[in-house]
Image (cartoon, rainbow, N blue to C red; front, side, top):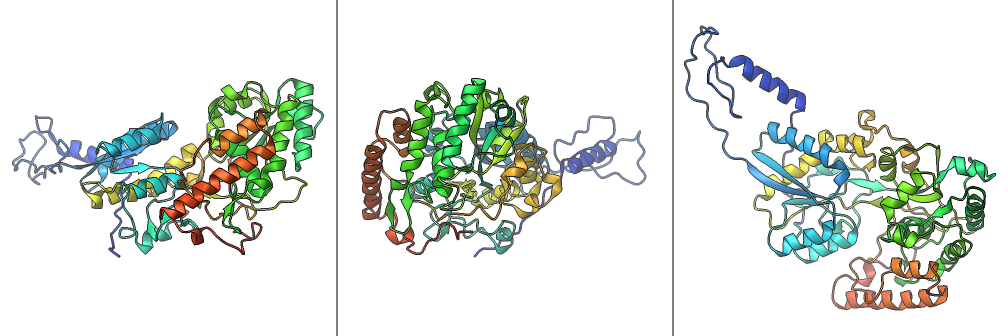
Length: 479
């Protein structure tokens, strides 16, 4: 393994000090520094004398490292931190930031297809990791990652078929994600519910939602369905894991997809839709709009991920928010809530200067960058020095309730990058909730099509069945 030495970078204060010293050293004449070292001053020189010196040597051109990201809410802070790094690093690197807020994955794919891909870039989800690795767009990072670098990150961050594929590390994970149930305590009180006792069973969830709707006119449960995001948050990535004990429909014990266990969950939301306790017009409401409605007090309960507290912090909430675990069928969990490891960052396989691209990634994982990002956005950092340092703790309401607990666990990944024929599971769940499909028909259809796609991937050599088959898996024993 090639060892690379991680160089620190000067803080912005150090940059300002350097500039101050340069200005102090220069006379009021026409001398200009232009980014070079400050002129040396003879001990006998006075402030009114022309300095007797050779012209300063140029530092030479810097290597530009193109960095693409999708977090539009962090654009200003990232721009500020990168500007400080560009002004202070001694490695001859200039990071060029490009934030793509709309259709990021599509734009990124087009850039690589046309040969204009960035040197380093953010990526989300195991399917994305597989896609970039299979297309030879991602650079394996094993040769760059030292034991020292690994030691910066928390245990359990290297997950097969997520950021590690075929023994090669393709992405550097940055944050973990937990999912919780958010609820409006004021609406609970108005509906005669105890604001300190959130629902713990499916029956209670349905009852609470109905009472909130009848007493206040607000939606008892908010399930925006325009983009499928909240189907993931409220069904697949939350109750799917703890109430059903299923990794998004994949049964690791059998080594195949089986959505049968989702029947009670689908029936719950179908019934809430029928009795009118869910958000009206949800098919036209996306995730951001759903958050806005919750912030306005128009929704009693809604699913939320660990990045949501940072988003809600910028909104004017007039009520206290409760945060709880999602309910289960009868109050007994069948699996642990999923602690998702984010995919984080990749290096391009076609980066012209990979050594400097790696140095740029080292900067991104430094507390000076990652710590400040977490401080602004919240989130659950996987960088130990950031996660354990109170100086980087975001002053964000609700965030503490999203911190991982022993009841959260890292699940084995489900098969990524399936070439599915027909609608994905999110769309099928939406059709069931809205009465377009029966629960039984939907489950039979999903089982058939997802297993066909799974078998196709195996036959094409995308992965082996053994990578996902775990006969002894206990969803309640995961860590």
